[in-house]
Amino acid sequence: MDVLLNCRFFVFWLFTLAHTSQSFGQINSFYKFNEEIDSLFLDKEQYSFAAWNYSFIGEYQKALEAYDKTSRKDNHSISDKEVALLLSDYKARPAAEYIIERSKNERIIIINEAHHQPLHRVFTASLLQGLYESGFRYLGLEALAEDSLLNIRKWPQIGDGYYTSEPQFGNLIREASRVGFTLFGYESTEKGRERELGQARNILTILEKDPDAKILIHCGFGHVVEDGHPSLGKAMAGLVGELAGIDPFTIDQVEFSERSQGEHESVFYKNLTIDRATVFVDHRNQPLHYRPDCAYVDISVFHPRTRFISGRPDWLLRSNSWKAYQLEEDLDLTFPSRIAAFHADENTTDAVPVDLVGLDDIHQKALILPPGDFILHIVDRTGNTKIEKITVFD
Image 1: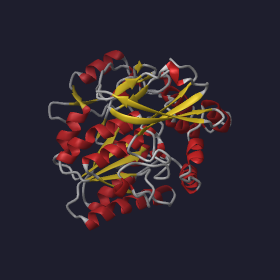
Image 2 (image 1 turned 135 degrees about the vertical axis):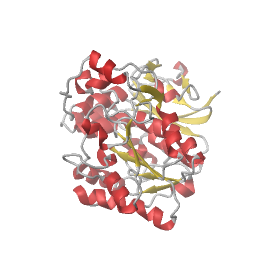
Image 3 (image 1 turned 120 degrees about the vertical axis):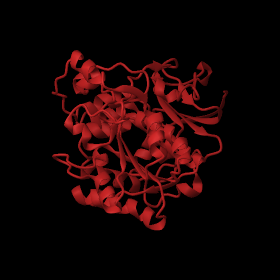
Image 4 (image 1 turned 45 degrees about the horizontal axis):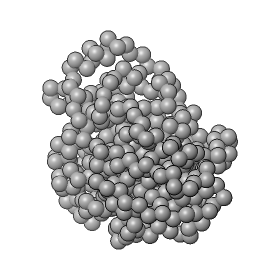
């Protein structure tokens, strides 16, 4: 499991917030072209920064490749036969179904993400309606700025956070607001273990105000660890449980998600073929822990490999409730261009785009959008911007 982001990443996040204004020009500069990301981060071996910035502009594969330069290879060994033998005692269940079922008897659920994989945000968003029906009313986001006005505004804007400016994180926020969640940030400015403790204490302020609250926490990487990790010890999730006296239901999405190359993937994951987000449980409905370090969390979600449709990851379609919008040749684009789609009823000068793609060719990629009216901002390499209005039909 990946280690916690270190303090220099957090400093970068604070720096970004401090230097983000609500002017159209500066918002344009937040989302960069591929060549800018290459020169600013990738060429300087700042691979995590490169991965995050690629994810902001819909470059999913490039984000995976950049981040994998920071990660070690999986040296565990397990054969196809051993995988088959282990799985003979388990059955596959749809992950969302299992989590919603468990949620009825849980008070605190903590689910993580890899900050460069928007897939994880799309999955968390898919849980929100079911969790709300199970009584969950609060969503805590590590990435959310403390003074965000989201609960008043109901839509995300640049400056609400750093990772929250990635379109699928913005859509997670939109879905949470639509469903009825109260959103809150819980980040701590401390370092190391004190950061974990600070996060836990900030989360507990919700229980102090509402002792019966049911809370969902969406965190990054290893903050989901409960106990026993040789390098992390008891991270935020474990400290929340200790301080609140409530055993959180912890869910990892990172370990069993695809990487850019198989050498970086769990050997167990490489030996599986699945077509949807899956958990493995035994006859007692207890989850699979195929090696001891998987027991640092309650359950792991196994995500299927991405297929690409119209140049975009298939999971963006959200079971075909969102649509691929093919860009027309009469847009008279120059290349490279960046196209951001905004809800027509949001302030397009500072809203987080619903989707964003960079194009080197008109047929390269589609936008993936829900049915509705949208305003497109089409920006060329010199910063010139054209505005178009479109409608996506169901």
